[in-house]
Length: 504
Image 1 (cartoon, rainbow, N blue to C red):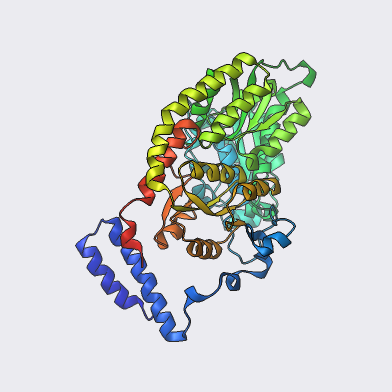
Image 2 (tube, helix red, strand yellow):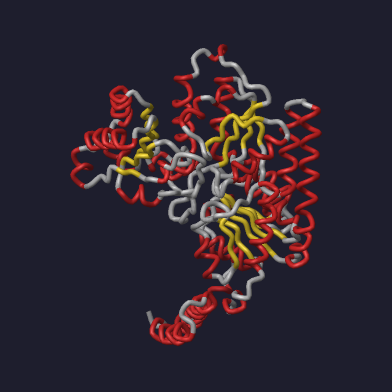
């Protein structure tokens, strides 16, 4: 590498002056980029930034990318989505097992046992940072740690031994056993092992069929939902005998990051709605078994919980509503929607009173941030489509223009909503890769990227502000309080003086 030594010399000089300074680190990154680019132009006579965006796209990806209002967009019937990732495109989607673990891990009193190599268990430890009001067993990530010998001769005995040991030590009444890629290849019979363990210990031992080669993260969501249904169904008895709880809901698709379930539960209780169980934030075995008694399912993260809601409507005749508690507008609309569904005039009045009170508290704060943020540009790349839709509205509330919107698992319906909300010229893309994200954000002049843990390094390498809306955060971004927290974080990040050191 012809440019490493001189850049290393420069970096040493910077870090000697200020070892612990973020500006120094960012300046170093940008110096590296600039030097490498200049040397590349010298060597091969090509300015990589001068290459057109369309030249860099993988041919098979073109139907998954559109620009609102463009000629190409008008010619396309619809954006290609909810499909397998193109080979070699470096998708940002996670694996099947990861999707299942995201959904099930917040079940607080369960033993979560990963049947596979130790890396799978380590990668997903405390994956969402979900909070608990009681048990904390879920914070442990157990693994059978399959080695070469187990892969050659099978790991069923090792799995059975691990279940026995964990049940004796932790006295839990629920065990989730996750399949991984290697288990799908060698063909261990999880069903048989789990059935034998359940009979032996008289507890729930549920296999999660999350082998990586059966699909992507969306398949993992479905595998997790199937496992939850297995937990619920044996205890439901005759569906006709289930007594419904009046004015009650199951809250699907919230994993209690930074206590967000508790915030939304508080709002609902104030308007007279009883939260029967949340799937799966701060949930536990006994609560989940009571899910069929709810009068209504409300679904926040449709990507992970739509399938469960559909199956519960089919089996238990529980209707569902799609809602979102992200942002001021969507939080207010969702509370009204729920109250309206119950056709309860008193509930509707309480909802309006709560909305009026909370809006009066937060609007002055949002106006203050809007004055400082107006005209900034944001890019969005998140997991689910519902979150992207809410974020577009939320950015409009604080005066920020959204120039790029993408998701990993968005549906056709969600992309149609995104297209309706987006401004002319906005890039809309599904299942993007880092190269595409970099090029579109650079071309559109984005000041901020909202994404997940995998997009963070890309943003920082570009000298761009970043907000993690998916995992790595300790403050709530849902509800009225979340709207203020989000605006505050956007302001603190975008308006930080550090970025002047990070620009070329």
